[in-house]
Amino acid sequence: MKIPLFDLTRQYAIIRQEILAEIDKVISSGRVILGENVQKLEKEIAELVGVKHGIGVANGSDALYIALKALGVGEGDYVITTPYTFFATASCITRNNATPIFVDIDPQTYNINLDQVEDVLKNHPQSEKIKALIPVHLFGQTVDLERLEVIRERYGIRILEDCAQSIGSTWKYADGTVKKSGSIGDVAIFSFFPTKNLGAYGDGGMIVTDDDKIAEFCRSFRVHGSKTKYVHEVVGINSRLDEIQAVILRVKLKHLNEYIEKRRKIAKWYGEEFKKSRGLWVVGLDYTSNQQSTTNNKFHLVVPPVPSDRSHVFHQYVVRFKGISGEKRNALRDYLSKQGIGTSIYYPMGLHQQKCFAYLNIPEGFLPETEKACEETLALPIFPELMKEEVEYVVNQIISYLGGD
Image 1 (cartoon, helix red, strand yellow):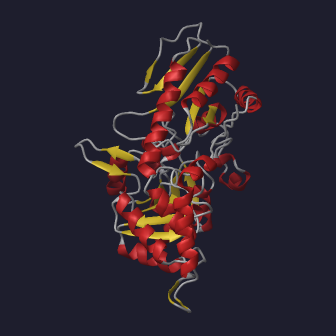
Image 2 (cartoon, helix red, strand yellow):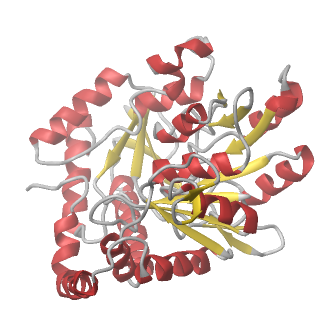
Image 3 (tube, helix red, strand yellow):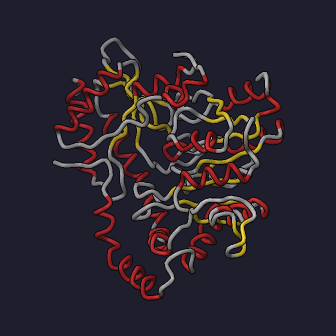
């Protein structure tokens, strides 16, 4: 059996005729850059999130760069973010000539640890230079939005939400209010990379905000800093979303809720199958386990937890093998590959361990939860068209390798 980590072809087979018909309309119109479909998509994404403005750009990395610049971040400034994320979250900081401050993660959700964020804001020797916070809603699970709002008010910090992996995810407030990722920051971004829950067949990104001035800046900056053709107020960049990708995304947007529900069902299948094993001590789903830890349990497996105060859209299904070495995890991955199962490691090292950030002089062990997650986690196949028998096969192969039953 061959099971890829992600498979676009199955989805395309279902919506092919719908996609082709819309692409034909775009090409026949002769308007292929920043046209009607881009404008409609911008409005639709803004409405989905619950904000006033959407600004389509070429990709998620540019969205981060432009959005952070719109907050006024520049040389001499500091920006807090997580080291356990895709590179673009931090590179947008250095591209704006600012310096990242990496804060460790929560070991259960892998999202940035907000207690430690507050510690930095209180105790950093140059706290007055910390201009922004970039929380990442990693793997599809929302950071505590209610707490983020408190932090913003308490410390006067600007917030750029990195929602590249979390479109459609929510947080339930103590008073019962439910808000979506991307709705509470000064500005937020989405990525439409093909593997995302809402993915293009190329690159694409979106900036969303309630702030009129931020929106105006972003719209200008994406077209070389121009509001009027051939008149440039600032030196911007060329980062425009094309009509073909926009119309593809508009077709897929109609199916987004269905895709998310299927991903949740698949995640539930994984949890149920793993919990059947008596050789694995499985923790997760609701922070409970399938059995008490005993000396007979060889492996402690953590599946993605889903507490009641948030919704998870499962952009990735990441499991964790507690206490094993990266070498053992990598050997398991090699075994699964030989069985036809695609996996990935998100992420093999923390951003603070990347050579390009060596100048920050962050010692090994300073961000222990990030470093442990990089050693112990593995992403398993998940996409809406994945079948239950395929999930069972993946789980059985993992249990077989680990010696469970």
